[in-house]
Length: 135
Image 1 (tube, helix red, strand yellow):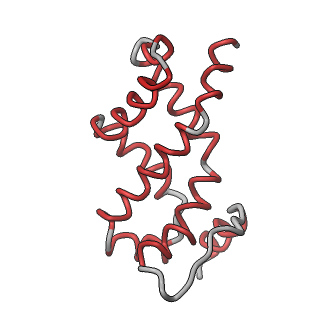
Image 2: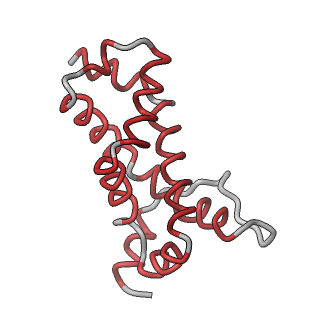
């Protein structure tokens, strides 16, 4: 394992609930072993990226009801391909070379999992965007 890979693994948060077992699919193992820790580690950056996205789109997000804010987040990830690719890059950039090799074997399925996880993480933290408006 390269020095870069070792350093990346050292700084990742541990998620005790992210169990990996042999009876799980390869994608599920990758999700629990790699995606969950990386997305957790990149959480503060993801929040700032979304905040910037909202500002670039004339702060319409802040005028929406709670349910429409949820839809706005989903649509931003599903329909704005440039934005989705940016989010994907933020996560993939934290993979080790070994993880990247596994990722490219089923990137389509893993990208779907990745975006679902990011969507839920952002929706679960909507209060962050309320406090950022007040600042």
